[in-house]
Amino acid sequence: MIFSDGLDNRSKVPLTGAIAAAQQAEVLVFGIRLFGHKIEEDEGVGDAYRRALQLEMADELRHQQEAGRFIMRRMSEKTGGSYFEGSGGNFTLIFARIEEELPSQCRFAFVPKSNAGQPRFRKITVTVKDPSLTVQTRAGYYLISSRSVR
Image (tube, rainbow, N blue to C red; front, side, top):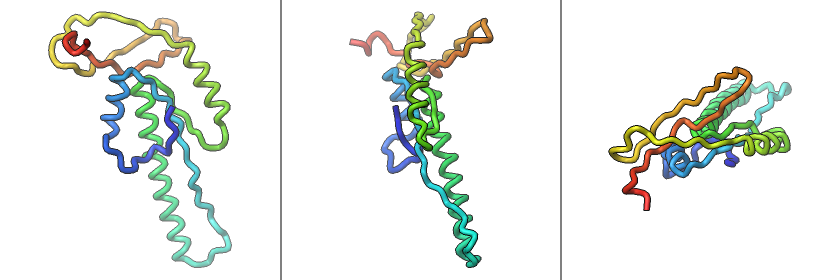
């Protein structure tokens, strides 16, 4: 589980690198985005400059929230986990959903036709015939050559 606002604060690894590391480690990321910034309009403020500054700050916060949401959702979806909006005290519901998801997981294994070359990411798609079922999967897996496994 990652609790974050989703914004990048001096990371040494880009988002794609963090996703790749989680995929290589076969980790499911459950992203819980925390945000608490809120600018409330003060109807009593008559100063046009102050109101303009509040609106500018509100626009910036909206942009940051959208960016944070994208990052957390991307990391969760690419690793096969789930994404949740965590502010507002709904942690009990979030944890119940994660608890519900974890035991309903299963693993499938197969041997690819070719495992030649360098370790690389291979995309996979899983579908089911029953439309009432929901499938949530990782985006793929990293092929590891037999030489790199010891």
